Image 1 (cartoon, rainbow, N blue to C red):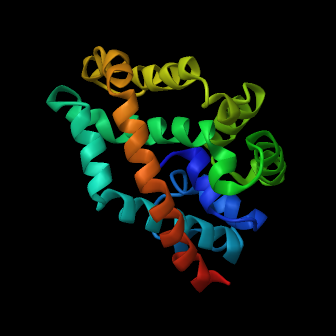
Image 2: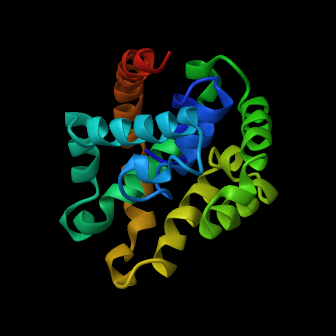
Length: 198
């Protein structure tokens, strides 16, 4: 899952949301970061990692990856993460019972309070995401495909993404159907996981 999903699945606690955002930025054992981050933030990181581990094992994830074809197999994981954020943004209130704009406003408010403590790259991404209203604009196909295309600047073999946008458009309905079968189960699973942090 990508940034929007992890923020939403972190629940209403502000520190858990910060941890959900930082899950890909704080590396290594969680206890390594205990001097800098609160227990709740680190619980959010742990939840983020648990979500990713569970998602990787689901048949829907495998089916979505397969839809992108053998040519894109090596890069399909992050592409599907972004695609799922796109489908979530389009139907956010259906699953999280509030407008996406309101959710993003509150989430950025929480994240901004901790910006100076974040790794430098996380700070830069946070500023860009907020200034461009990225998470809200994930609902737009153009923005979503541009974000996928931006992966070319971050990988050593950009050719792995050749014609990925064409494939995503061709498989859009199938991918969206997979997301809507999968996401309610994920929400239920996360509710069970989150109960251990109450």
